[in-house]
Length: 486
Image (cartoon, rainbow, N blue to C red):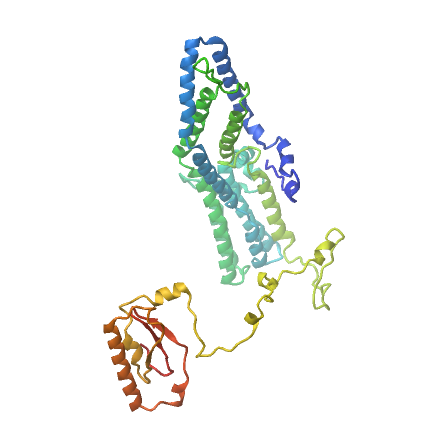
């Protein structure tokens, strides 16, 4: 059912998508041709009535009505309503596909952790993977019309080999008002616990891994059921449908050829086939048909999911992996590149040109720093090196903050750093006399305290400068090691 054209667009070429326009299966023409024919017929009938059957007075009245309808089409937000709706539908469509349960991870865990080459071990592995496939068949039978037509009753499920007669009797004996697709998962857990007691599953870690994979499998079945149960709100679908139909109802009347109301007035070009209106119908109505087709991908449309093929594939692959492939390994030998330091697989003549391309090492490997050789020279970082500030950083540093105290920078625990006032242009900053006197007083106190205490050798090594700028002037702290934290 799924229409695949991936190979046709593998390479970009001239008119690549144009070749896809002539395909019928899964095309927009197949979806839309009936509605398109109805629209064209109705437009032609109104045109004939206007041109041949109406009197002059009736034509004037019809002209006013048509002009009103044409103006009304601008009031319907078609692109917004349809675009948002189709985006929602497409995301939901792909999420439903990723929710289809696939037994690949589960069958690998079963094959590697349920041991035994005897008949009992083989029965355990095949039964466990059959229960998983039975669960997926039951949920797909509940949501897909194609699967339900294939398995219309539980007897058909038994005949297909997914369930035995005893299992069917036990399944039907359990009464529940809700869907019972989860029952095979419970059988799976009980059988796995029995295999652990019998030693077929050798440790609790392997049993936990098996249960985790089963829970992921069951969660996908549950999510698929909820996608089928909880639809997109009906009001939203109704709003979109009414918007599209009303838009083109106005177009049927308002896009007709109209004779001028006044005798000398110049009229529009008389086009018997309204190409722009037909293209607009093709785009907007086609957009709505796309949403209509993929809103439930478990039907029988051309682009719906091939659920029956997935059931066949899952059963065949899972039984093959846990039975015929169980501990059936090819001999482990040295590979072709055993004695080579670098493995280089061969190329064919069709792909030999790829060997001439250099390997990508990163975008910065292509940089060439030859324009300014001075910037490429290596220098050592020094505490006395001038520090530069970006304008944005300077703006934050120069901002006054009540949390910054000048005394916190001038008084430490073990060694007290001193403050120096930057001697710059006096016009650069507006000086506050009060702040200047306060800073000078603190500098005097710091110098007196430093004269009284000898400095250690370590204190002579200077750390990087920290520049703090108050509202009145810049203050640079020459911080020494050993000073206490502010």
